[in-house]
Length: 335
Image (cartoon, rainbow, N blue to C red; front, side, top):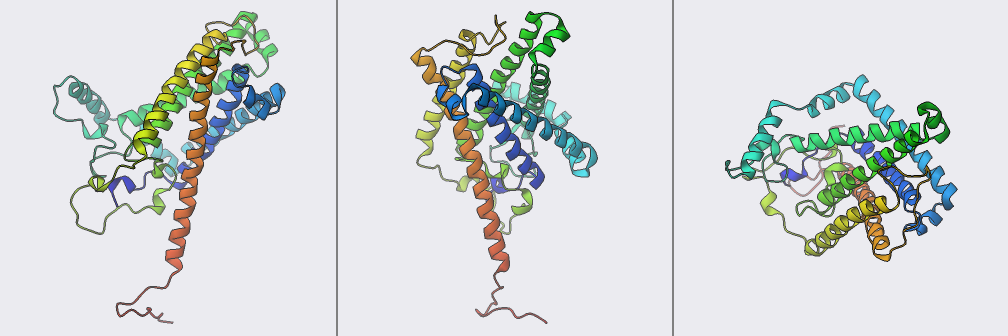
């Protein structure tokens, strides 16, 4: 047992993380099938054509709105939610960690601040639940989801947007803004998949994102010094897997950015309709690489939940087994 095995989130948080991830993946697959319908023709066909893709995207958008409303209500109405919100608020330690990180980068500090360490081998008491980087990710992701939701609702009916803003160019700007946010969020999600799926200490998944802390011990029964991270062994397949997926992540992001330019995703498209005629083989391969990384993230998401189910069954099995006495027999009940 290492400090990395300690629980991190509640059951509600891990469940919400799974539902939100699945919904966002569907939004990515359907949204980019609309935008890159030439390069992702196979995914368009898989969803039933252009009308099917649009329907899937709108249904997933409705699911995202429902999840956001649920989470906001939970954060306001429950003690756990209010406590979680207080946990992610920036503190003085976060600012100190940022300043010390800059000094460490410049060679003026010997080590990183405890509030900046996540996998550096510190103990659970020394390292907070979320580093200042983790808190920043939460806030950035929340702002992106909010802006994507608002812009998505506004362009749900293109006629309504044009009536509201009086000009077709202004309406097209909302489409552009929505697409640009999607590209920015895509980069963050792909790096998130790579960071938490291919970190040498976590590969292939960070189980704490799936197994709630109520099912993982938060203390050690032995008196062994250290965090236990020194007991970890590097998986033989990690080097090849991290290299290949890392390259595909970078190529996919660059290809999506270039494809967005060629397919008139921004700065302002001439037409409201999204999609382009670019059929260059290299760009097509690159965009499909990015989609493959997203599909890999979806697979890892399901694998993490499978590990949670297996761990839960193991705990239930251990609880159902009778206790063993010191002489090899079974402990008898007092009844």
